[in-house]
Figure 1 (cartoon, rainbow, N blue to C red):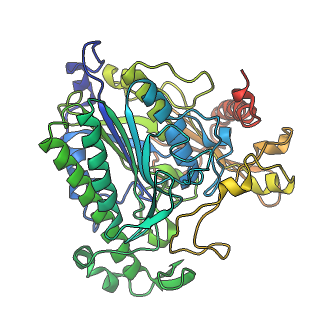
Figure 2: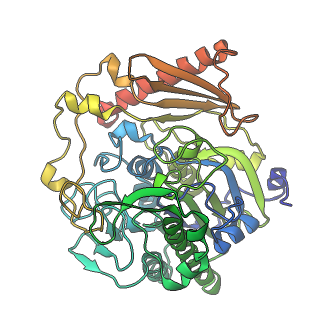
Length: 497
């Protein structure tokens, strides 16, 4: 049984002026849903390292990706802002060079900053104005999108190189070399590791696949669509075969995280290093089995945004704690700013500093969480102008999945035309306290409003909108006010001094 969150009160959480700045390692899995961990009760997948982190560190039981798909969540992770504020509406949409990232803040505080793995908020090549190096990182080994075994990466924006081996292990080995260099230079480090696993198409090592050899027989009939490793196009395969490979990727990623934790312990860095892990959205449909939450990747129900959330930081959290505090990837930048004592960017932020709440032992978030899937089809129909030169948005790193006839990924972002009423469309929601309002446009016009009591009904099975119209109206009003703020940011107003 984990101690109560109130135990936090027994531990000093605010940094003293004389104490050294903590190191930070911020990790994220690709399409790794909340239910796909041993500590959350999954019947098959083996995640002993994440389970140990959950048993010994701070477990964020209600952690959310900012969006039910990857590029938008990554933009939120880096900036503390909702992705719609910077036009990162969907996978393959970049953010903007005027954005201020957690790496920019960390650099000001004296950190050495490195990015390793999936980027997917713009091209990683040197010429890109939204590459890791352009957005505040001092070095990187990065990919425009996702990757499998024997991946290709671009080092510091250079031409892609093939790295033989399992991708999660490769990234952790590179990260270890980076943090050791920073330590030898006497600098705190910020390492952002964005794994390519467990995004499809799936490839596992033989020893990891063997752990799940019984799964094909358990799901012989259900078929799912995903990418073929042989052709790069779409194929259909039995779910059991796919789950075997998907879970092998998760286990390999888990093992790589274990390698990193062992190095921290053996090199004396563990005590004052904050290690964070989350997923970037809910489980993808091709690898979905079942979940206590409604929906999956791309859905604005809980299953689309609820993801694993874990923190280890022995200097501040010496005892295991589980918190019901609802938190999001957008909270990372404000929380870091509070830890490092650097001022927040002078622009609207959607995340908050979590540390004061944790130090007070509260499980209540003082401000709502907002989610919004912008209507990109309506935007494209208005023929907007590109925000960046399309040549600078072209990717270079190859991957298995072929899209639009190419095995790389290009990006897009547009200058927002004059704001019109239709710009508030798309699925959107607000979570405040126990209630969640979800608004979704209907094909025949109008919008459907659903209200859920997430305390009594975490699976979002019972719509209370008709029973509690006053709650619906209050949440709808605040959701619209927030959308208006986001549209102001999207227009570029935040970049004008």
